[in-house]
Length: 445
Ligand code: SF4
Ligand code: SF4
Image (cartoon, rainbow, N blue to C red):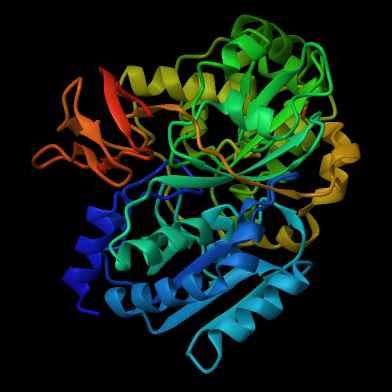
């Protein structure tokens, strides 16, 4: 397929990176690359969404990856997944057939699915600090995103998502839903919670976002980047950790950090060679150092993976949350990182021995009992009402092209990319009437 036609089909369908923050795919894929990687590593414990895609949609993943390889001019195309996904590996091998794609099998460690860790594992090259995979000639695409790309090539817009619903629910499983579906409806599809007053995580247990009550969950909807919903007991360590106020974190950093540097030594960014020593951020933060301090500015290298606070720190401190607080402050004051951007190969020598095994991580997180829950097929939901945000991606919100009272059908355009802006189109996910319009388009069927 012609490169411009490929990119246009991806743009028109509103495809964004579904495994991360939602970067518009037509922009990401416009680059030239040496290697393209389909990322099926799904390292967050408890999530099965990418495995589901690989088992059910292998042909589409392979087709989209071949098109992406051709469009970027890449010499090498790789499907990367975990060695333990034996069935998915076989399905993918069959789908690949005699096409020129490799399969890379990774061990079951966290965060194998992090783009930069994956690039190092597959190519042996490290993305430079604060850089992108493209800086070493690589484009990475999540397997779920590639399924949406394959649909885009058939002229089908991104309107639906698969997500894992698990934890303290009566019937854990995989549900297929229109974008804009309330997450409370996804919980109901899984039989509701088995607890009276649960809390929830949207996404995975390591990097997901906490929602503090069932009432708050009513206001949350499925977006293009939602991959999971986990119900947990109130007071679970993940709940407690996520709700500690920043001043409390500062006091604890000042009082309890023993500067053992385990957080730095186990940090996946340091282990690919970045000059990132998060124990120095802890020291600077605890001591109330100036943000312009070189140690504090290192926080910008943190990818929020959570290994430090959920696995490394022997004192139960939260370097990740402290990095988040420091990063937010640095960005608001427009202070950047002007330290070294060199990759230090000497820092990578322990990488193989400091990978975090997922079962051990799950034990530390207190979620082992949910690890082997069955994954039922919960079918496709047909909600009577959806609330579709005009911004589900990095960049400018889509500009609404409908008005209150308009009749729309599934697949009709709701929001266009503003002229000259980075953004993504947004589409109706059900048939119905536009009954409210603002940052969110509400459609009632
Ligand atoms: S691992 Fe914990 S105690 Fe050790 S330096 Fe890091 S934050 Fe401090
Ligand atoms: S969250 Fe912790 S382990 Fe992960 S990149 Fe940031 S400092 Fe490193």
